[in-house]
Length: 257
Ligand SMILES: [Zn+2]
Ligand SMILES: [Zn+2]
Image (cartoon, rainbow, N blue to C red; front, side):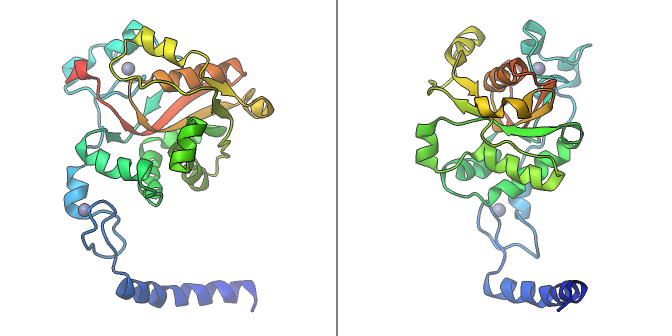
């Protein structure tokens, strides 16, 4: 069978195949398992509950503001005004709240790796400009012990899906955790920086793929931005020309609540 014939056969064969699959395995919402119509990934209730981050947000780190007045003249959040991040720009499509947790926690902890395509789709939507100017995608690394427990690095899964969608190459193992770190929640900016100091390093055999390149760092949840900032510092020290950050969800700054 020649190639074009094979493709047209597949095109015609696909519709009945999808129909047959829908009858055998009716599509379900990826969050609550309720039946959905056609190719929808989420039911209307779960979709409605998700908070998408829209303007106004910090132009540097992407943290959402609750009002335009908060944005001030420079449109920077208090954290970015106090200490400018090392990375260029960060953005995320989802506000990390209860609805986003129902999507992200099963992806992180319960082997629901198929959720990567839902999250990466939203990341590609808000991060189109960042993906366009990136030379290479690099995921935030997890420590070996955590990788052993979870069996996969959720940021690397997102980076792989985004790489397939955008055609940008991905270096899943460019960064590694040299040691485990204590949870950063509740720590001051200085304490977070101290905890992360020396915890993330570049794999030496990846250095030539980073030098002179514009890197887009990929993460699942961006909290204070301290981990992204540490990764960006390591990549810049290795000669990256710039580092931006694209995460699936952003934890709002409690000071801006
Ligand atoms: Zn649902
Ligand atoms: Zn900011």
